[in-house]
Amino acid sequence: MLEHIFQPGFFASDEVQTALMVGGVVAVVSAIVGVFTVLRGQSFAGHSLADIGTTGGSGAFLVNVSPLFGFLLFTLTGAGAMELIGIRRARGRDLATGIVLGVSLGISALFLYLDTTIDNTSGAVMTVLFGSIFTISPSTLRPVVIFAVISLILMALLYRPLLLTGLDPDIAAARGVPVRLVGLGFLAALAIAVGLSAIAIGSILSTALLIGPAATAVRLTRRPGVAMLLASGLGLAAVWLGVLLSYDSYDWPPAHHGWPVSFLVVALVFVAFLATEVGSGIRRGMRERNRTSASVGSDLPEAVRS
Amino acid sequence: MFSGFMIDTWLAASMVAIVAGVVGFFVVLRGSAFAAHAIPQGAFAGAAGADLIGVNPLLGLGVFAVASALGIGSLSRRGRHDVVAALVLVLLLGLGSLFVSWNTEYGSELFALLFGEVLGVNNSQLPPTMILAAVSLIAIGVLFRPLLLASTVPDVAAARGLSVGRVDLAFLVVVALATTMTLPVVGALLIFSLMIGPPAAARSIVARPLAGIGLSVGISLLTLWISIAAAYHWNLPVGFLVGTLSGVAYGVGRGWTWARRRSRPTTSSGPAPAESGRLRLTDGLRD
Image (tube, rainbow over all chains, first blue to last red; front, top):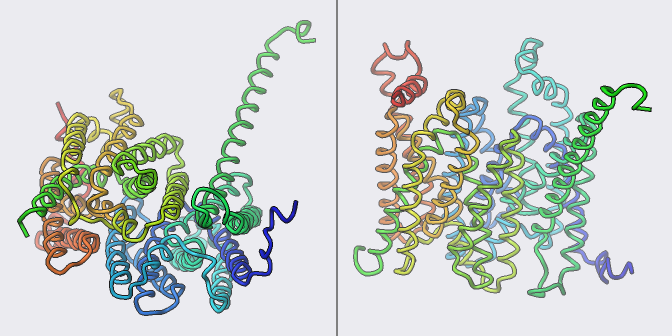
């Protein structure tokens, strides 16, 4: 039975070990940063940073650097540019984010085109956009862990001011919280998280790890600390299950060469979100039905009720 | 540059630019850049899937674009727009990557779907592009007044008995149709910049809706024409040129507003340009 779930060679393979470790670190960081991204309503910013990371990843291929550094450099620069343009006014933010995003997507089109024509690395498009967790070299693990720790320290420092500014920016400012600096610090943590998850499941899918587990957890609990724990657990489960299923999928139909990890992770994350959505809908429906039946009951005379 | 197969390219690209300019004007007016970004990326999965099972990619594009528009529209009514839209978007993208991985000959085809291949437009693509362009423009024409009202003053629109949610849904479907026709030409990732850059530039220059739409169409035509000429001449990807030129157009528009405000200091004490623009928009709606 177990052999059917864990195909022979699963734990012995170096690629799988690296994938499990990198994926695990990335999932936890994304989930923790993601909780605040969802609470602050910055999903679009997170997604845009991921797309901006595409430019960095494809540029890194061009100059033969590890894509990780390309992703990180561009997401951090993108975060700085967004803060500079001023992303707090909702309407202007939408537009300014869109313009920055459009330009950087254009540049990544050029980079990817050059990757495929000059360098003849035709796998670049697939790797940068959709990730290939099994081809991560073990030497990438160390920088991934270092950046993950930086991002987590940032989040630990920002935890209380972020909660306060999230509740009410004006009160936070009145109490001496540097709102703008806190926002910038958070964007930096967000940029690192997005850059890291881009290496694992690809730049345009990293939004899934950032938003999915966090949105699910926020729906289940109101306490941010608990939500972070829950989201980390969900993210870990999704990534590890995704790696396992992808490893098992080598003899699945239709192509017999494995399903992409990225798709499996995204699908698992989405299923979890949908399950809580449906579950909370059913629970709300039951509660409302109970309330209406209770109120109907109270209108009836004593004798009838008993 | 103007002979043989290039004629088809110029025709298709001009239609794409016109539709993107018109639809994009409302995308910018309504601040729904996220939806305009999400629908094409979702549609990409449809194209990849259709390619896999050997159906016309346009059909896959249309089905997935309309489906993602309906999904986002119906979920956004509950007020949790961004999270759900982001998740639907990545799910569809993930599906796209799955379809592409099943296909044995990916690579250049994937690149064309994501970043466009305007130089590869052929004769058979022209009629469906033309029909879709006409349908989107007619739909915008029919929706014009309710859309303008619901976009600028949603409360007034609701008070007049207009269903703002239904207008929103109809508009998203129009975006999906426009996506279906533009995606094969400029690619899934870059329709977005064509729908945002030129209209945003136009809106910062003129405030009246009709003039804005006209200018927006003009700028997007210019952007795409220059892009195609440059792409043909230097053998560059069209997506790169469209993306950067749209950004440049927006920058010029912003610079224009800034210069005008500097040269006429009296207006800076009055309402901000965006505010007066909104007022004039609603004035135009008076019966």
